[in-house]
Image 1 (cartoon, rainbow, N blue to C red):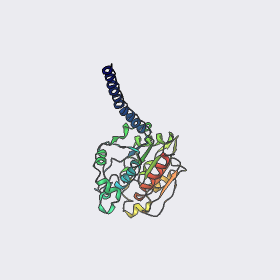
Image 2 (image 1 turned 60 degrees about the horizontal axis):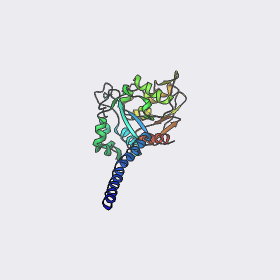
Image 3 (image 1 turned 45 degrees about the vertical axis):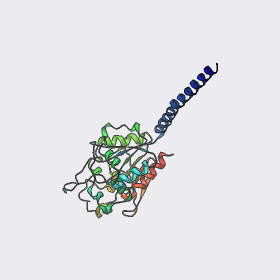
Image 4 (image 1 turned 90 degrees about the vertical axis):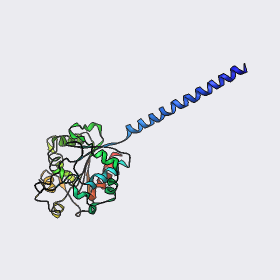
Length: 264
């Protein structure tokens, strides 16, 4: 009897241990799934245009305006997907990679092989569905003035986010992509407070005769209530779901305002 009792005790102990080993991973998996489901998701849209008008020079997106908001959001647990009109590697404005334009965020980007690999594989804009995200963010650089400002997929995407009560954020030249965006037949920016790269800043970089349009003028022509801060100083405007920043120095400020909206 003693041997039988001992055998039963061993079997029972082993069974309990097996149950512990099988239930713990399941609990962890459930926690991970729940965390992933509650994680905020933001779509970043970058330009695919690399020619600076007829100058023979290159353009693209501005590293600071991508890296600073990316890290500001990602470090807070936001899941980010990157898209562009053509998909794949979007062009980087070579001037933004110059040491004179370096910031802590661009230095971090330079050493971030994981993000650089992710950047090589951006999703095609036409394949994006706003229903999969909580907000959209457009970094600037001169490139967006040529392709995203006239891209129908981009215009429809912005309108879709906006009409589904989701934040739309833009910095520097990126507010220019709002130029022809309409909601219910009216320009989205009409009567809205906005900012973006100023005429004076464009003149300072010598490109007023090169860009396809001046952002400040275009937004005002479509009824926007445009305002600006000092040249090159951080300045951002929030009007409901619409968040805009003036220049590269405003990138993190726009991201912070976006994060506040996501956390409401």
